[in-house]
Amino acid sequence: MAKFIAIGYGDRAGYEQTDATIRNAAHDHDARLREAGAVMGTTGQPVQVRNHNGAGTRTDQGPFMHSELPVAGFTMIEAADIEEATRLISETPCAVAQGVVEIWPLATS
Image (cartoon, rainbow, N blue to C red; front, side, top):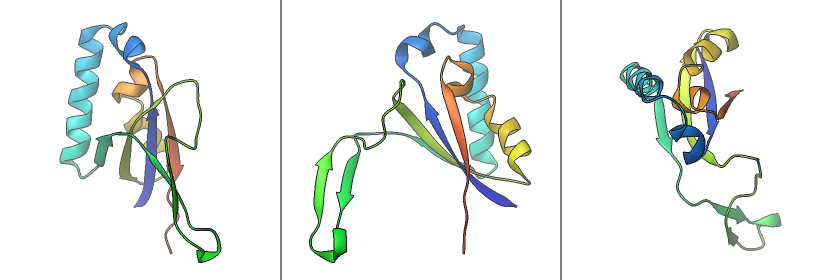
């Protein structure tokens, strides 16, 4: 099985405008993904870390990436291929509640 990282983007306004029945079904779907071994969590405040040329560590508060919607959370799943990963992620809260989810194949060595 291949591993995939899913990055969910969404905000409270989009979440709250989605029918509660749909949101609850999405949370139930997430619970099933966790039971099947998915690692997932919501985000806190990010810290950027740099240590260019090993010359010393520098940190900056805040995200490096910028998007229309804030990063809401991450999930790591296993799936046979990108199509299965898409099917699994398409019912998560960010996907159904006016957000968007990116799925990234995780290359391992």
